[in-house]
Length: 308
Image (cartoon, rainbow, N blue to C red; front, top):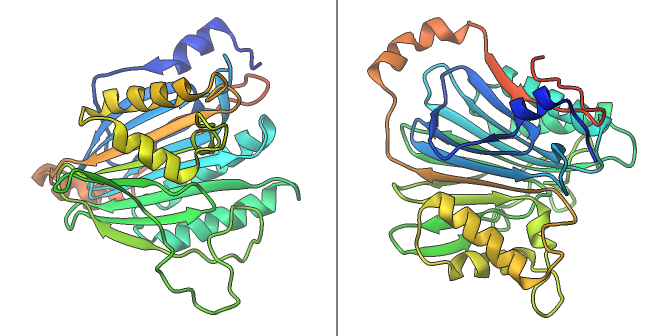
């Protein structure tokens, strides 16, 4: 179990139901136990991360970023094999990439850089899965890349229906080119991109494999289909209640569910808001400015690497 000082414990165990405004040129995230609600241009985002047992931090890493005008929002969830040093190095590397690419909407370049960096700094047996989303508010366009992570779920408000967001219908460059591998498996792996439009009220649900590995009443793993069925069974409710209801429903299926691994949910909803005139005017001045880093990264020894 990870041990930290009382001061650090108080600092990183953040829980809030009131939304916080994500600032332009800001990166937020880390690998600590947290429940947060953010407002971004065009989106609201809820993050619930519960490391295994009573640990303060775990192997699930999450980040949000907002560009110089707020028009580009990036959302990342990664699940790193193991704990301790490899997680801290990965979390720090992902934070740096989020900062470097804060004004870049290109998904494939970002994920390819993630893969190369992870491969260069990890051991042969280390790997990580990741889901990366970029939302461009003016067109309400969501681009998504998946590096071996469980498929996210999409809720269409107009149809009141949950579906699975997959890349299976997107053609690969060549018949023998294996794409979308977890980070660290092949440093030259390519990544496909899915693009869809989010109308007001649409939701996207991303989650770590603690949820797909959870067992149903038949003793078998839920998988993505089980997650889809569970989400669809929950009556229409607000996002915070949806997260708690989903967690409660899965825990009710088996006493060990969500107790043997880190469990993280990232839920975001299109809210239809647009970039303010002020942010548009200030964007050119912010573009070459410093990126604000409000991340919290904790190592296996309890050291806080929040600012890098």
